[in-house]
Image (cartoon, rainbow over all chains, first blue to last red):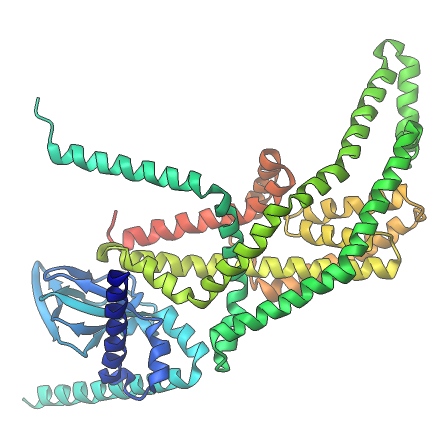
Length: 164
Length: 358
């Protein structure tokens, strides 16, 4: 009984920590506590060991990940050479294209350190938006904001590249 | 000879796992059917609960409300519908017994098939060595026995009270937890899958849910609606035993191609045997035709959206094969089961390649 209780307390703490973590992810920062609790129901927690492949280029794009702990590399294999495109740290998300388009993965991802990822699939996001439209709109708005910023950044880089 | 120890241990553990699984299935075999029923019910109810969640009604509350509604429907059934069905069944079986008392009544003549009866008589007259009379009596004797057993079988299966009691307690309780903690169950199942296969399994699950789940839910709703329309049609025409006959029509409806005909057989028999004038055969044919047209032109496109992705010929052969193997129930479940397997195979073949597992 005691052991059971201990385990229970641990898992409750883990849940609390996870929901707290969600509030510090840019994507979900506008959500209320209850909305985050509801969102948590749709999130898969995945543990990856260092060196483990998360996905490869060409896989169906079913799920978007948010880095909770650890470090990952996003890379592209071009002619037997892997080019690292991006290094992901906690609070970053990747695979978001799959939430909007039915496209295959455009790059591969591998865990550099032991990592904990939170997965949210396209279908679950659709279900979440359907069931909690207010919270869903907040997430989508934030998505638009982040992607717009990304475009501005890319545009800047493009202009700088031309000038330089 | 050196046998690799690790391999032996691996196989041993595998064998133990298989043995444990088999033992568990044997141990829980009485419960498994309940679990399946509970799963199907919660699968059907889950859209309602999810819809309620949209309006900030907590899951527990909405499940309880749905249970209350169902309980009220059951009470209504017990007080209004069941006595009627019981009366109708008893009436029906009494009529049959009356019929069976004089064997002449059940001869082909009484079923209105005089021509066939006449031709058989002619046959007997022409070829006396065939001893057709003997066959006739054997066949009608068997038929009589079979018909006498029907009410008994019905009541026997109903009267196993303990079973029903267990059913009434287990199914709602399991349903409740399945509905309330739907996501938790799902997450727990997926958390057991290793990283390599996680995305593949999720993809497979979502695809199957998409194509089969929708189809299955729509099919059940369609059954209910067709039964409802048939009952109303039969009541309007004033056919006796309208309730049972209509429900049979609805239940047989999901059987592709044959369903409407199988479902109509009891109605036709009731009209032929009972006091209803034979002209009603024409009326019910028209009525069933209208119901079928409403079903296939309005209900099916509305509920299922598009026809299932199976060639009509394959559907036809599947229904016939199901009928050969498991009778009417086989005909009913053959197409959904084959469709499910086909979907699983198709989707997994494609995504196994995409995920570079094979």
